[in-house]
Structure formats: structure tokens, C-alpha cells
Amino acid sequence: MRKTDKKRDNQLRQVLTEVCDAALEDIEGFQWLTHRVDYERFPESLKVICVFDSDGSLATFLSGSQSDRLAVFMQKKLAGAGMDIKHMSAHISYDSEEQCEREHQGQWARRLK
Image 1 (tube, rainbow, N blue to C red):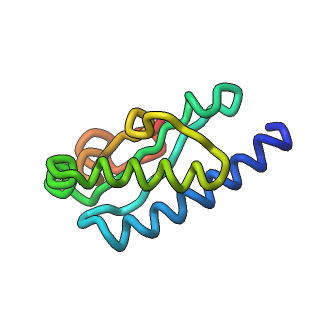
Image 2 (image 1 turned 90 degrees about the horizontal axis):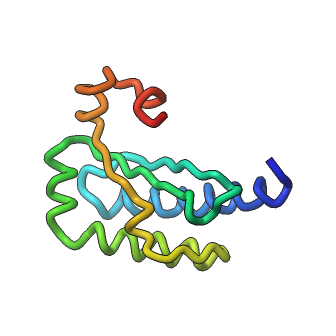
């Protein structure tokens, strides 16, 4: 990883930690988030995975306008750190602890590959 990639990775992790902390307070059932990125193709390659405690919590979240608000919030926080990402919602996917348990016996490392 190049020096500039390490710097960008640190900034990205810091911003996403702030987003995660805010989501934990504001979004019912939200548990954590992670990301995947190939810095050779940044920002197009960025993928943020938001994880909820249950399928029901995830369905409730997706049925309202909170997903749009989360995407806008994330986009603004990233832009504030100098990472302009168009169409943030296309870079976010959602999952639940229940789905991982059902499909991958709770092994997130396997699930996220």
C-alpha cells in the first residue's frame, strides 16, 4: 500500500467510525459497519456494509427514509474529509447478524469475502 493510500485509509476509517457511532445512537437495530476498497480504483471501488441485529430491524430500516438519510450523512462526512463520492447509496449494502448466522454460521470473515 502506498503512503497516500495509507493516509486515505486512515481518513476513511476515521470518518466511517464517526458515521457508525452516530448510527448506533440514531438507528434502531444498527450494530456495526465495515468497508472494502481497492485504492487503485478509489472511490469507485468503495463498498460500505452496514449490519443490523435482525432481519426485522433491517426491513424496518429499509422501508423508511432512514437509508437515504444515512447515505447522505455518510456522503457529507466523506466529502468533509476530501473524498467526494457520487451516488453514495450505490456504495452501501446492508446485512444482518441473523442472515450471517443462517447462511455462514456467524462467520463474518467468510461472508464478507
